[in-house]
Length: 239
Image (cartoon, rainbow, N blue to C red; front, side, top):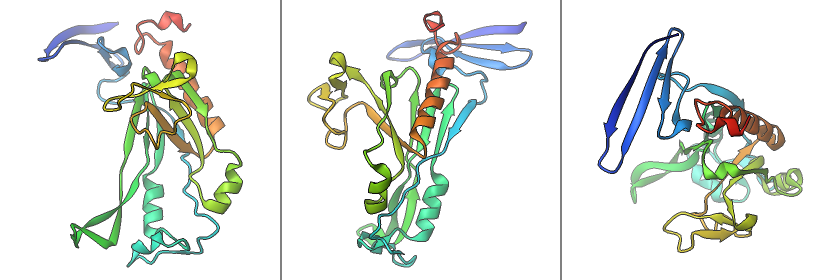
């Protein structure tokens, strides 16, 4: 049974949002009535449902050595990979977490540390976090597919790679186009157009060790959340 139930009104200049927090004898739920998927089983934490092994950055067959730690800039050479300390830190920072209402992943990038050469130090590299989150009610969850490239293992051995990939897309026009966000001049982009050439398209890609296993785990958690009235007001449509 519930000890108490209270509601509070948060007034914003642009809109009015109503939030309700319900505390029970066992736990304290956080309910967001304006956007149900933002609700949580606990008001003080976010539950972690599953962890997926991220893809590993692999160098191609031309790479025969690491860049020296005192000059990581050598990684621009075709025969040199990133410095060993960079590879270790990047691998330690990479993760994929399926949370109770969203998926979160980190694809860290390699950057130069601040210095005296045009504001940077080419002899000191570091790893910068690049964390992304997609909530289960996002348009991009309408189509989740395994987009691992053809002959991935062979191409990774020859040219390097980042593992297998799962794509999140926002299809429209019968699946022929995808949604795009401003400042893109067109609000829809043909599916044949790579996201690298149109960064404003609503599409995300996650690299993981096993795309089929990751796809199964993601869909399982999403399906369970969409059938829960805590996260979805129309949960009965999914039962």
